[in-house]
Length: 255
Ligand code: G3P
Image (cartoon, rainbow, N blue to C red):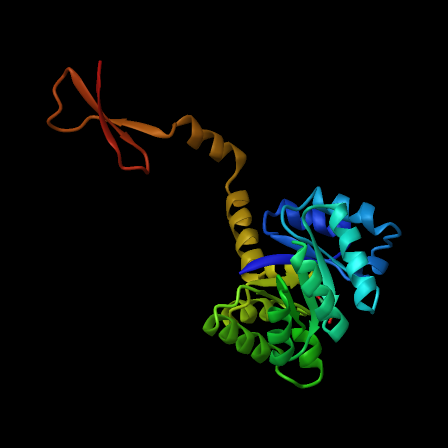
């Protein structure tokens, strides 16, 4: 399963890109607004410069013609733009047209398997089922991911499933187990995925143990060198066997 970042914040995107974990980026109008983006075209170019892989940008129009126009315009910003289109009748029409023009699409706000099947058949490159928002309604968001993964596998549908509306690390792990191709993850959750209290405690203990040995002791130990020369019984006068300390490797060294 690939990891995308669900963010329009260039600082967050750059940080996660440096970790080497990102396969793409998803944005939506809420995320663009939260990141203070005023020129989405410029923002997309900057994001595409930091992350290899698709950069998802969502249309604002609600009619098919408007969505198609916006999609064509977004696609000119970068060859890696994927146009995000909401799961409506107009959205399906737009996906169908943009797909014919070779423009990548992601049908968003998918909340049922029926919607996912329609989006795939219209030609969506990706669909985005919203796990967290289903969980919010006491529905099982992950069950939808499993259903869609089963259906797409049985019918050899190439549309990829992006598990979206991810709220915590367990969502990411469960999405991977459920067969999502991609999880799009907020920066905060990516950070949470890094951390484990036993990792922190382990680092602290290693450093404390090492620090407990005095600098002079370390210097003496290092003076003694990493190699100790030992006379090995049976070696001739013309030979001496050196044993690499710790590595257990022997080498005959002529005088
Ligand atoms: O990828 C969709 C995401 O941005 C929505 O997340 O947490 O607002 O449901 P959320």
